[in-house]
Amino acid sequence: GRAQASVKAGELLSHIAAAGGDEVCACDLVEPSGRSQPTVSNHMQILVDAGLVAREKRGLWVWYRLIPSRLDALRSVLG
Image (spheres, rainbow, N blue to C red):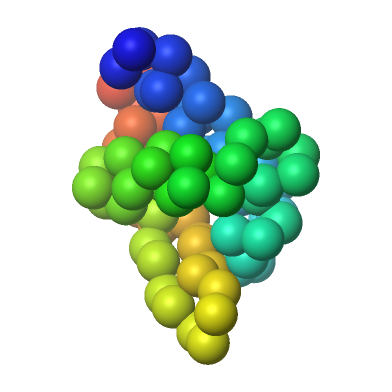
């Protein structure tokens, strides 16, 4: 359910974080996550809604990047 979705969203967040501040194409998140593109989009929407990730649509693809200030706030809460 929702908890499992949060775990998957966390894995995607880690993948974007590994890009070192660069943008990541949604197309690059599908294969490593082992999920379908609509499922990846749903998980990414959780991160966008939480304000952790910014989304920009360009042509056919959506690009995501971390919002570092929000991530720092999250880290401080999680310890």
